Image 1 (cartoon, rainbow, N blue to C red):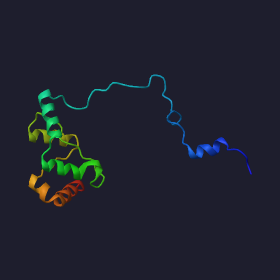
Image 2: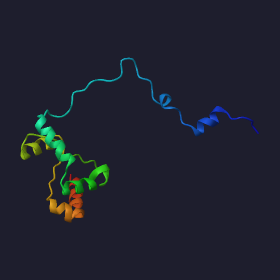
Image 3: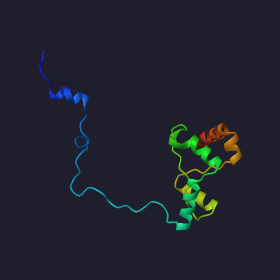
Image 4: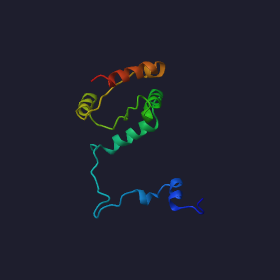
Length: 127
C-alpha cells in the first residue's frame, strides 16, 4: 500500500484551473474592434422596438414562451429587428440574408398554439 497521496491522484478529482486550460494568446492577439453587422436605424425606431420587446402583446409573449431556448426542434429563432423599411422590402432584405419570415394571427397563437408550431415546423423542413 502506498502512503500519502500523489499529485496525479488529486488531479482526478479537481480539474485544472481555467488559466491552465486556456491556450495562451500569441503576441498581438486580443480585443479587435468590429463594426456592427446591423444596419443603422434612427434612435426613435430603436426606442420603439425596445418598448415593444419590453411590453409584448399576449400573443407575442405566448409565442416566445414556445420558441425561446431552442425549444422547438432545437431551432434558433430571432426576434424582429428594428427597421424603417416597409414589410415587403424588409422581407426581401431578410430573405437575401437567408432568413424566413412567417406571420400568424394573434387568435391562432393564443387559441391554437400546436397548429402554429406544426406550421412552423412544416416551413422549416421544406427545402
